[in-house]
Length: 635
Image 1 (cartoon, rainbow, N blue to C red):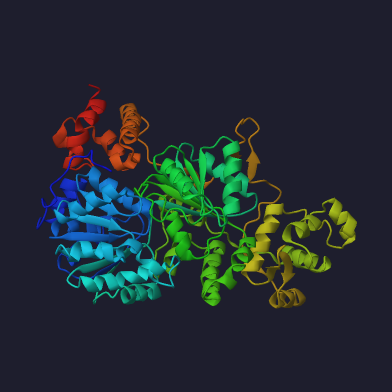
Image 2 (spheres, rainbow, N blue to C red):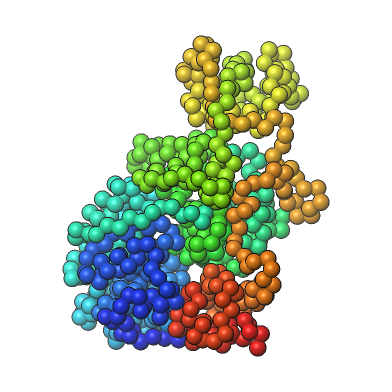
């Protein structure tokens, strides 16, 4: 499929030093944290468990040993798209890797078998379903082909305590029994202690060395907004990221389709992805996103596990994720290239009941509820979000001290946590109004009564004659909604039923009866609006009238006074896009954005200088060097 790249002989790097492979093949000058130690563990034939965040460089941890060790490396991967992207990236670097899956026609399948038999490939990607077949196993046993390493990607799928359990993963351990001399490496971005134990047990790993990297992704700005007017909030957010790739996650197919249609009608470059679409449509939509033919993908969690696209600049969670693991996996799609990116979560307590609706269909509802509560705690926290997120994975984080660090950390650190405020009076007004309306209504209705609305329904119910009618005009509706969320987080209020009816908890009734003081971390804005529509936009875009700290979190660009660098980047992007289209691969397979930035900064004059650019190895220098140098030097 990818036979147009310069090829390196399959045995070129056997017994070579890892540093040589890193520089020659992949074009990197140094290893990232723990990569070299993990590689050495495999070179010493030790089973190895790696917990490393998305974008941390997991692939190199098994790809480099695969080139150095004799025999072949089997890589078990859960998604066809992931295999294809990984193989394309390796082929682009001159490495002859192949995949064996259902997309291959019979002729290509037989050709790949011959490549394995003749020693023309070192890395073979296969699905867990394909791995378990006798046909695949017999290729190696009947031809006496050495398997040096079995790699299990997305290894959390083997654990029922993980967020994406897959039954087929349980068969991987039995495959290993046929090739006991092979070492095994299991990799995942997230794994609690229980999941780590399951991985070791279910994959039958032998006294593995365990490497747990930091879960911190400092290039991703973390932000949570209360979901008030989600469409307005989404449009405001993506408008600040104009021209950049982004993913919006929703919990239901219906919401995905509705939001896709709305944004498409407004003129945004957007497609949808969920299990309700045909395999062909899903594949086409994903390919267009990966190839930068569209900018925004709106999807359920079914999208993204195997996406290697490095230039996703933002992720929006339109709905509350079911767990911190799921949330971490989803925001991990952003900024895989290490450049500044951002993640926005729109939080509404109403999402909680929607998630709980499905708990009756899961094997362990209590476990699901515990995971959900951790997610709610994160969304409602008033302390550093990064600290909160990392603590879930048992990692300590020191809150940033300098203003620059705070601005790049999370929304709370950048603006400062709200002070504890005496909200006794407004809380009493709210709770009394809930009682006066007989605890039969949702938050919006109760707040409308407090603010003296002349809504027809309020008048028909006679609630304009209540003592609490109109006593809340000193605060804005958003202030009241914030107060509802805070009182719910303190277990003083709860939403019940399909319509999210507000009621007081027993603790709430006790505090109201005793007239206890209520202190909460909040800063009311009064009657000012945060989101305002732009009146001169034909695209119905929205603007922020208060400066948002996330505005600073955009993709890195050349210095303002370096016009030549700007020209180089634009021309290289255009060239990369044309080349990728000709080869039918995503643009990042040619070069990632970080390489383009480095090219524009260093402006190499010849091949020797080209090899000092981030991400350019010998194969890519040979393949693309002349075109790149011509663009940079305008010759």
